Image 1: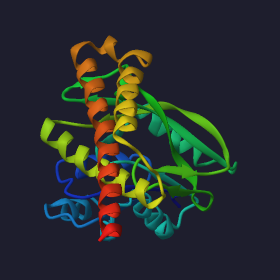
Image 2: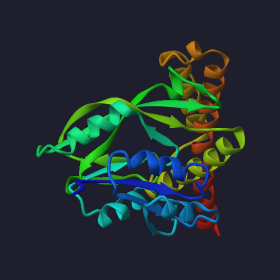
Image 3: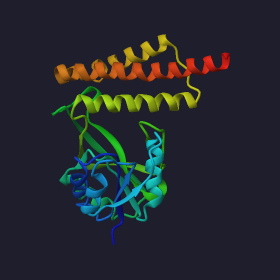
Image 4: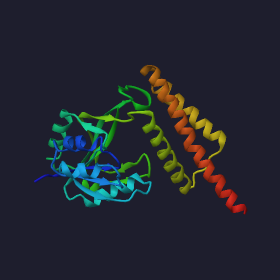
Length: 255
């Protein structure tokens, strides 16, 4: 009996879905796809390669999607995998061994990013460690965007890595840029966060310095510089959208 379910969130992922499910099935037969309204062949392809597919309407909340999936998981363990991610063979073996244990442990996994056709080693897309494998009853997710899990179990690191095939082109990057900055600003505004134009510029400038210099983005060459510059504009836009919401609220109050 499988002790692990792998959860994949999707919307219009027909280019990735069959490959990621087949990759996940090297660990377990239980693959749960939570689709948020795909208009392409994502759902059809997911079912064809043997995944269970459920639907939840998208409401600009990544944590809500992940927690919705969690409520449907019936196995002892759950692993979250994005449609543009792949588990390497060493990691697959480590996952199989980990889910045979009875210990209450959460596992972090090394993630390596590939963007615009090349690997990154520094800066914005440098390899990082992401918590992904949990006891099903021991985790919940928080934050609408850049969500993260809350789990009190001891953390360990699995061998192997996830390869993350993030941005394939600039059009895709721009769509995510707009989506993520909007969600962040709305969430920050709802939680009472305040900003000014000066603060927005400061945060953006610090973000550039952090990614380009402190995290050595310059060592990835010109693309490292470009990604650091992208981070400057991403950070600036988050705060400008928050400032816009503040100003709209003030205008309404004055009417």
